[in-house]
Length: 452
Length: 89
Image 1 (tube, rainbow over the protein chains, first blue to last red):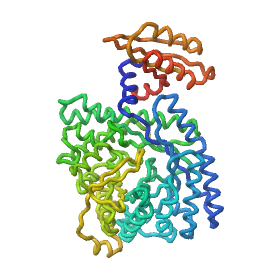
Image 2 (tube, each protein chain N blue to C red; image 1 turned 90 degrees about the horizontal axis):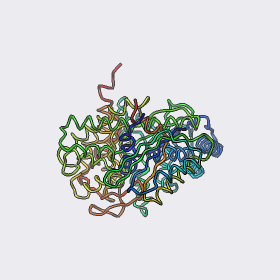
Image 3 (spheres, one colour; image 1 turned 90 degrees about the vertical axis):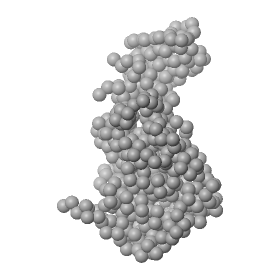
Image 4 (tube, rainbow over the protein chains, first blue to last red; image 1 turned 60 degrees about the vertical axis):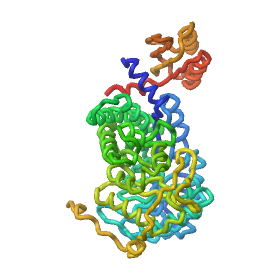
């Protein structure tokens, strides 16, 4: 039988340390909705999403109530839209975005992901039209999320797409300038994008997936932080063990919720994403874990090493706790969504260059970072090119979600509210990257892509 | 279904009496109880069996939590599988 210490430990994790299931995301294939006629396609998309995900929120809430574990988000991810919209114009694409928005509202979900294109080698006309529609699509909808994959280790980097995305991110920022450029918070540029990621804004339902699937993303930076705090004299090997054990417990909870959600919704289980996803709440910060390991402030020397240990230990502990692991799995370091990162960036300790180094050893990338509103498109493209190179060369996922805060500069901040948090505007290098970006073309795949 | 009820707060007279009464009224059988008072802090864990379909789980849990809150206690009613999954391999 369970002992009281274990029971009280679990309750403390939930009550005081912000343990939760961050998202239960239903992946839905849209391949069977394809139609030359955009209105027919939109009708089928709306019907399919609302039919399959109509009970998602109620089911998630019932599980949360019965098991006593909060399930923060219930979401839907669909097949990348550019793959199922043959020959659609920019206006047609916008109709699709609105159909997704309507479906999300009907289902009561806060985000639907998959307004996406995969252009890591080259772009089709549908890809380009979807990308061109983004400034309007992200302004006119509030729940639709987009991701664009511009590189893979196998294909190299599509620099034309990187150039285009710098321009599009600026346009999205300008289109939503009155709301602190929030459009950019719903747009991620990826290298090696995973096909089963449950986390927004980068979630979509990959081409190798089935008809419908449930993927679950766990969280729990506060639990890891508290576990380390209980061992102030532990050496770093012991710290790694503590993180592993904690990650194991957190992930077991995620697996259990995933199994139960799949059973109740009669949908197959996909993966658990073992991610430490922070929130702006005090005590739910990845930066605080690194500081608990012994850094005065996140961003100082030693940060990359501590993050590398954390990321690796989370995966080691979590892998054994789940039957299938996938998605982004690792530690997330979004600036605006993490109280410790916000403070460190505000104090100037955590810089864009340091964040780039950190992304070489953890999941995702330059995430939710506000930059000055007058940053040129070519500089944004160059930031993307740098970050994406780290992913391509190291055979891992990296991503960029930066927010040029229109009309604002270093010293000010942007506030999105809720889980998206707030971000101090971080300085970028002022020297131009224009010539490099304007060359266009493709950066060839690295030699280690030839593994055949 | 098997559930775990945890009760934490300042000790006072009648905690077990009140909460076990609610269990009885809802046809919830108590399989085991462990309880401790240390430095005036009361902690109790009850392992109970809630009959399927008798009464809405959420309604029973809320009744227990509300009764606890009236006595200044934090009460959680949770499915046993949560703890099993986390602490048993």
